[in-house]
Length: 207
Image 1 (cartoon, rainbow, N blue to C red):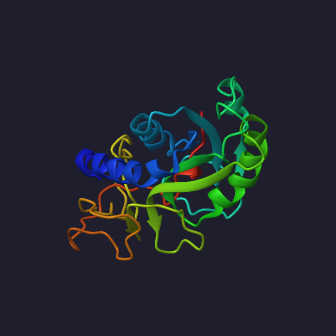
Image 2 (cartoon, rainbow, N blue to C red; image 1 turned 90 degrees about the horizontal axis):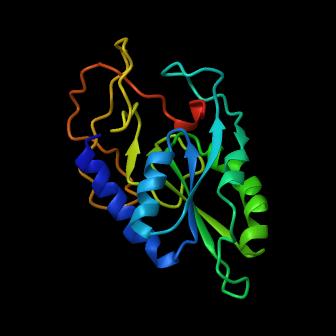
Image 3 (cartoon, rainbow, N blue to C red; image 1 turned 30 degrees about the vertical axis):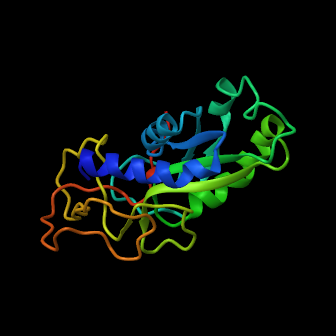
């Protein structure tokens, strides 16, 4: 994924979610934090962090286990003030961001606990909407907004390619023009195997 394509994706996602007037953006570390920060900057709202992971190590190309562990402790350092200026306002919305939705398991696991934790700061009507840069074609529960539909590994602009070449190709992503596409996003079918990216950012251990 090029920096230009990534920047366009963030702009599209910001335009689509701005109408919700979100109170905050919550990034799922590790992979979701860069797009969460950039989206929050566009929307001019605070950004928060939660940690989640599927796998027991940081090796590349590990398949998701289906079991998600999460940690909301990073919220404690940033939730010093209410998310909404007044409890009397209409129910607010938070955007929960990950870089890629591999199966949907991470969002499914994190959202209930996150809302339970945030509602004392924002009122019982707080809602969460989900955002990812990529949605895997095999995801059973997709995010509310995504930019690319993918079926191979994705290397994001902020990531360093693994030192050891992999037989799994990096998916070549085209410049995005719309959200929630239903077609696999490629500019070429000639993808030379180089280095790769596991299919769910939360497989990585958060700091």
